[in-house]
Image (cartoon, rainbow, N blue to C red; front, top):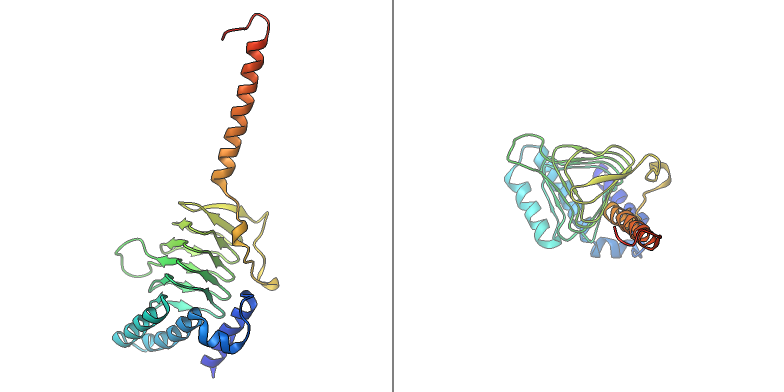
Length: 225
């Protein structure tokens, strides 16, 4: 009964976060992210009981049918939503909290051949956007967002927004990611762009210098510099 309760919560998460979801039958039949999660929960149960080969076979079949690769050793909390999902990879020692959203092409991976914990731990209410790569045995804190295409290589505190390659924290506390009590913030398309902001500031300074230079050239007795 516990297994079916968790699956019911996974379905509920889809309705909460995907406006395209019309009814339960559609979700059950047409959402590969849900299929991958259900199959993973089965393979993970076998993996915890000491099975090795069979869980890997099951996870490979899931990858074949859904385009989503989840190692049976990965620990996944309640209400995970994998949207579209093609190309998502979740490594063996990954740990994912509750109410996490992962978009297509995201990777929770390792950075070397070391044994033991080598994949990230994702907190609760985290959004990992399309194409993001979170690589290494560190934690991404609760209520944080990882921008599309970002490469995160070090720990992210709670309530942060990370963008860029390598990933940089661009929002922290003063513009807090929506708290768990009020839902999940999916507006990942509205993240700040620190590279654009820097170029904008440089361009502004260039125009100011150019204007000042022209004023000096027009001044009496200062025709040349």
